Length: 545
Image (cartoon, rainbow, N blue to C red):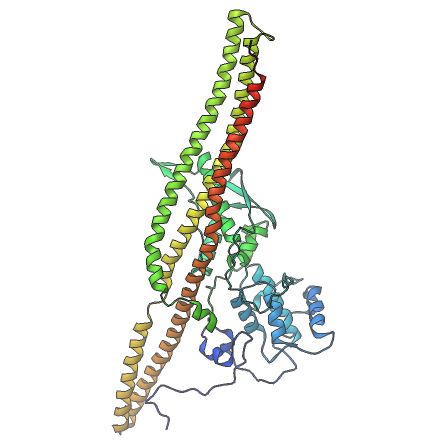
């Protein structure tokens, strides 16, 4: 008779091992698609994907790549070779793992599986959901993925989760405000995004959509906040105010520059689609977007890289970062005051030059002096000098002051983003493990009690009742075990992200702060060099009699 007095033991089936894990990993990793099926370990001559899509529907590159990897023979391809090729699509490791789990069903990769895997990679780069139907329902030709060459000295198995250590921003975008557009009910403004991938036009709501998607996909990554859609002062909306629109434009530009310089976010398919697709609205209507949360079973090296005192460090950061944000916000406000003061100063010199012109006219009318007279010529020179200085002050000096202000806002936004990350970490990290363990212990005690009662019970009907209850408690235990494994995996990955994002913040912080100081110095050097040259040139032209 089956022993119902202890949790059920299932016979281990031979599981196909994915290239990213060992056989033990596939059984312990609840997120792994490799743990969802069993298969014959012998190579098969056909694939379940054969015939689902005609060969002519695939772009020519699929056949060329297959021939290159199999030397033109009918031989199958190894899983390791396909894995290396998929890594070159620059998709996250989680996506590569899922593609392999969806397509490969044996120890080797067959031609149909190879084509479907690369097709899924192409659609994943566009931000689409990773399901076989995306390929089978696609219109020909099925696109070939973007595959990059591996840098010299870098293994194709290099970890795509490694934190980038570059200091300066390697890619930037320029966002310009387009003219007002008439909508169905209201007018709106579009933004032109100029990047290395081309120019596209986006509404503010498109930025909101991208931001919401990234928060769902990457809740434990350092994602900056968007500027507000509108601002209300004394009951009046400033959504159409020119100064507000310019401030929001700069905020959107900082947002995109942060995203494009993040080692993980910059490769996301939705980010690339956002920057490349001409009509995002049409793309969204015709595409089912996958919003699977980023997750990964950490290997030993990554797990050991997390400091044991991370929670203590987080508690300290929660106290220190708000103070940093307050001080940098104050610094930004002071830069804004200087900017406005410089603008007022420049306008005063414009007014002064105009007044000087009035003085010249009055002098000519009162004394009859004109060109060639020393007084008249000196007044004219002064007017010209004031006009030149006003132009220098208004154009160059204001621009440099604005750059110093924007540099300070980058630092402030960086701290705000990390504080928001810590808030999401507290909110989304599972805290139910202890409760689940207590539920398991309670069920185990019930099973022991029921097993003892079952041994003493002679009535068949009552025995079946006990057996059913033991089965129910075993199911509860198995469910709790899975939930605990999920929670522990998610919590460990969240801790890893919080730690690596902190390292990334420190790498970004140094050049950003340096840029504030450098821009501040350069703005004053530029101001005094230009103004000094203008006044010296005027002095040399003056005539003294």
